[in-house]
Image 1 (spheres, rainbow, N blue to C red):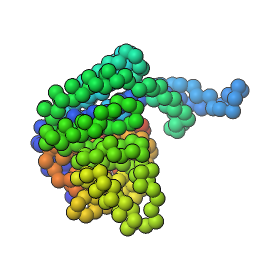
Image 2 (cartoon, one colour):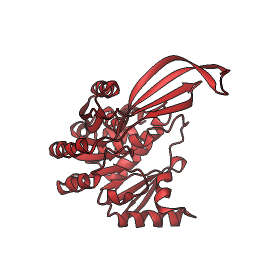
Image 3 (cartoon, rainbow, N blue to C red):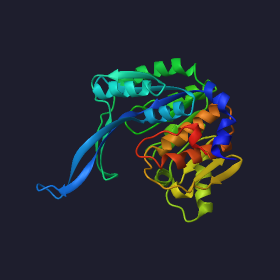
Length: 314
């Protein structure tokens, strides 16, 4: 059965599914141009910019992926009281995401500027500052209010400081009977204890558990991490090796889709959004992971942070 057929089986339930995404947001800006010469000032290419694009990034990309699949997506995050923050709000409104932004006038909205020449990324410039503790404390109050009106929570950690209270958020969601999916960051996973599902990629997983010599050792380390953190499940996305899901009942490895890879940025956002939408719609976890694997195969064929629509899962 194709991903589209699997997904359509849950179509009506997906339209009713309510997904709350919380985490670090950013505005992804792209400058596209041609490279015809090297600068006389330094040995670097000169890019003559022809056009530009703006897209929601980070947790905002997770939310827009959930909305693109047809779910009711709500986003809770912190932005600056500035032009990039207003641009994010405008973009998300156009993609049917209900954004609840706390504005911190003391810090700028995170912006990632990518310069693209001849379809290759030549440079990325980041503008970022951690939000203030006062704003983060206020976010907990909004989180409690939104939690009552959602079926599932996705916590998207990009290490920008917006999830300082993630342990409390996980506890409150589980106490309310809501599944919690976490896309982790860094090497301290104890802060994610008690989540329903953790979705590190292969490099992030290695950073936490160390290297492995074979598949058996990989699985042993995965199950040990799952038990230590009291997770219901652990999903390791493994690039060209596909995905491996570990639960109390065993392991499931799904091969990667054989597609041309154009850009892997944002693929993890698509994976966790797809799983979240389907679990909120009542799908089983193995079924959700199968469809998310196909969604990842689609999104890596697109440039930059992108979304997948149901009809593309053929």
